Length: 235
Image 1 (cartoon, rainbow, N blue to C red):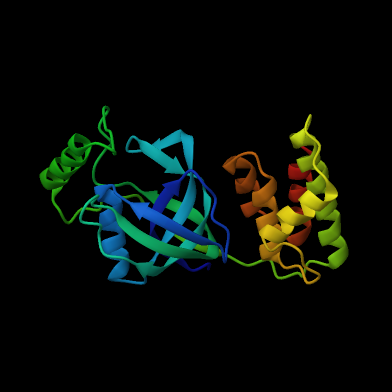
Image 2 (cartoon, rainbow, N blue to C red):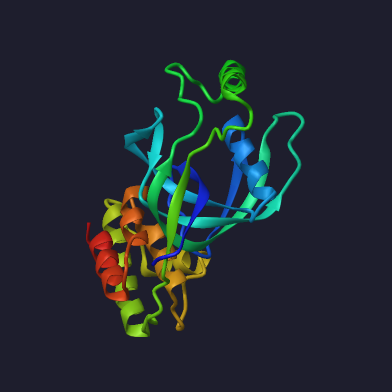
C-alpha cells in the first residue's frame, strides 16, 4: 500500500518545481498559522497551483498535484507591515488523495489586504475555536522522481524549439541568436550536462501561464515530460 501523510496546502498562482527556490511573503492570518505549525513540525507544506474553477469551503481549491516546499529560512515578522518572510525550496512532488477543509469558510466580502478582512478572519477563528486549522490540509502520496537522464541531444532539441517560440513571440521585433543565448546564460541554462531541473527551468522560461507548467509538473515519465515540453514550445 502506498504510504500517505497529511500536510498543509498553500494554493498559489504559480507552479513550484522540485529543487526550485521560492521566497514568500506571508500576510494572511490563516497562512501565518500554517507557518507557525510548520515550524513546530517538519517545516514543510505543499505548494499547489490554485484552481479558480473549484472551491473548498469557498476558498480557491488546489490542483491535484503539487510540490513539497521545505522552509529553509524564516525571518521575524516585520513590525511595520506585519508580514512574515520565508524562503523555501521545492522537494518531492505529491498527489492529493483527500482534501481536509479549513475550519472557517471564506466570507463573501473578504479582502485579505485590508485590516477589516484580517479582523474578520480572526473573529471567525475565535468563534470556531483557535485550535482549528484555518488553512486547507490534505492527505497526499509522494510521486516518484523521474530518474531517467536527459541526453544532450534531447536537451538541444528542446532549446531549439524554445528559441523558435521566443522568436515568434518577439515579432515584429527581431531577436538575435546572441540575445537568445544571453537569455539562456542569464538563467544558467547553457549546459552540456542537462538534468531534469534544467528542463523545468526552460519550461518556466517559455510558458505563457502557470496552467501550462502544471501539465509539466504532472509528467510521470521522461518520455511524457519531453512530449509535453515540445507541445508547450510549439504553442
